[in-house]
Image (tube, rainbow, N blue to C red; front, side, top):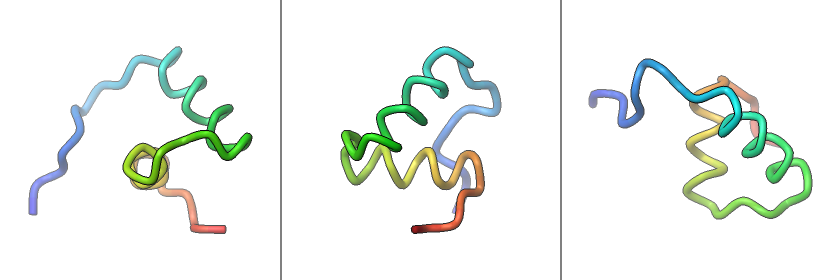
Length: 43
């Protein structure tokens, strides 16, 4: 299955998503996206 996100990513958006993830404020879909994008192991 092809990746569902672009090859480029806006740094400001990623930083905000990381902060929101750390605060537990991301939706399930956005959390999965940032984990996949940054290859983060699930907690």
